[in-house]
Image (tube, rainbow, N blue to C red):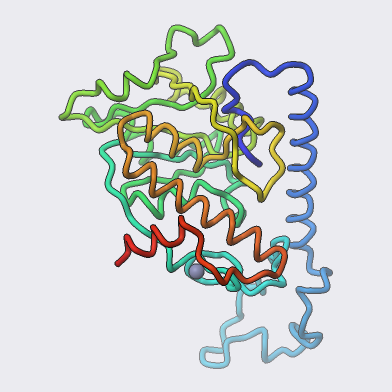
Length: 293
Ligand SMILES: [Zn+2]
């Protein structure tokens, strides 16, 4: 789901309705994913004899029982995916994985349901910016490493979230605050990676975020994301939010590389869904390939 949480104003009633429809779509996608895990799913039983022969249930070398066969099949799993980038092999992203340096770091707190979706764009940030950290959010068991990092004075973390509710107005800062972080400290953008509802839940149910400055994204930019239907074109997805805030923080080079990489991901994935192989590299593809040398 594209990130409706990054709307730059409180949703109107119409927005709220479309947000609901977006969430419904998200829920059905999740349902689909769960349904696809069901062992009765045809694609999971390509070999009708699998599991029937006792010899296949044990490792022939050791005689030990094998773990149950992994049945997870995401939507579109009939497509062969590249092991490197998890995109359909038809238009693989690997030749365009370029790195950039940035003083500003990005840490993602990712909802567990978002983690393994191939259309998730948060992972693109980690491909471009090596120091990116990804934490899985569990309400009752906060990540110990994240807690330690938040207590580490070397970092100056900001939680990226809209300023549409009055109860945390005293914590809201503008992007100039990121630019003004003293040189000896590392500014960190914490992005809550999930649907609108998931992100709001993470924001509201994580006591360790309660003291952090809240950084809303202010931009007129519209989403270019084509892989999920956004509730509004003003709702940017995670990689777009990161690119925009990096740019506004003065990290022009990192922002451009991430923007290009996101474009290539978006175009490649969308083309593969149509079984179309991209023969002519786009300008973004050419820039990234040149950067890799
Ligand atoms: Zn690949």
